[in-house]
Length: 324
Image: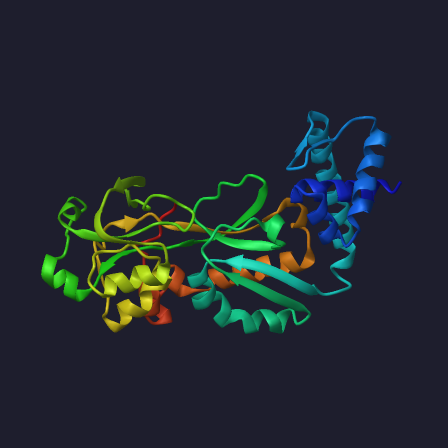
């Protein structure tokens, strides 16, 4: 029995929670996967999994063995990668999932630079705001906005998405411009509900370095970033979009920033991937490129950077240099 292959088959079955899906991703017959697991259990002398017609679950021995397998496989891949990195460039198909607006406005317009650097990598981009299970859907890595909750994923913070408070000139002409957090009680907001959430996302301001939540009344709730901004332009209320979503409308006057002395809490943005894929050369290449991209985008950091000459950049103190 090939012990390393058996470990790889075992971890793939656990990750996919299915013998059939594991067999598909490994390019093996399902019967072969079953045989490998049976032989592994016989060799170890313990039961690794409890198998029923509906689901798989690890035994305590199986859970402990899984953790050891992950470490061993990662060390092998790291050793291989250290020798292969200088000999060949990243190549092959790479499946990436990201929020729709982020992909359309920031990532796709810059993709030509990625392909110039890594011409042998072919990208399969999934753009949507729905939650994705990377194991079941065969996704290599994902870009996620907001706090991360899945502890089974490896995550790398690649930036902070700055946010601001704004509304249309027509709304402000009708309802007035709020001059304080307390004044928001007299205003309407367009509420935003995450695609996988049940309630509207609360407004959170950073005041004296501490998050302060503000409940806003609203006539409209949406779960799409473009619809969120459009509702504000149409005068339905105040919004707190990410800066890159609002910037074109701030520049053309269809939205106006308010409460400039109060910073909404920024949103962290991360690239995440299953723990057993984090050493892939193509995933590493994409992660490095996307981190550079976000670091170089003025629209993610400070409105004033898009309006000032470069000479004024160093001496200016950014009003929204806050942390989560």
